[in-house]
Length: 318
Image (cartoon, rainbow, N blue to C red):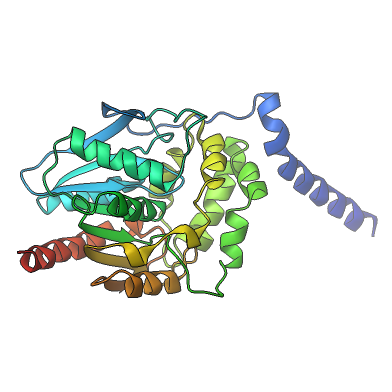
């Protein structure tokens, strides 16, 4: 009995220590936020600040990839490579406040509308001609906002695992509420140690229900560990990220493809169905065996769908 109580006490102490590390670790110098990721690309000046751009040059059509939340352009690298192999010029960039891009001034709003304005400014600055826009997760909301701001520019787009307005009387999943809670995020990104634990939990339980890709996922998590990211995550969440009902897909116009994983546990499939029903002329494609992280897990599969959409949309456009 005594041994049992000692064992229980040790386990409880370890659990308490694990839970407390993120809150006291930074004061003790345990938080590193330093990881080996790809080097910066080209720095382009936009009205809101400097933006880091990775440009995969090719003679084919321009494709712009907008990454999710949180993260950086690094999470879109597998999809960019797959599209580049199919002959596309692919541009991916760190949204303002993420990756190597500059932080947006604290007195300026940081929401999908602001990011949409950045996206439009970037395409103009780089002189892109009729680009195809691809938004992943939160990036899908950014692309929809850009369509509302400039439908003549953003009139051909793909939404992958996208945020969007839900049907009435629907609520986010329990997993989604937990993963987006301030307490979880403060714990998960308090130190490198707990970030590794959190990334493993997300990888195994949410992002890749069918397959785990620890190497690729570590690279994805590394993109979160640049300076300022945890603070920026909180700030952007305080804007419009989780207020799905602020999106207006019924006002979105253009040639649209909506791709969603059948096993996505972060954004429910019902959201994708509702988006497809709301956006006129949108095509919905459910990817079997794919979770929310399919841009990393199944880039070739997604690239093929995007290429088919490009051909179909081009034929339909006079």
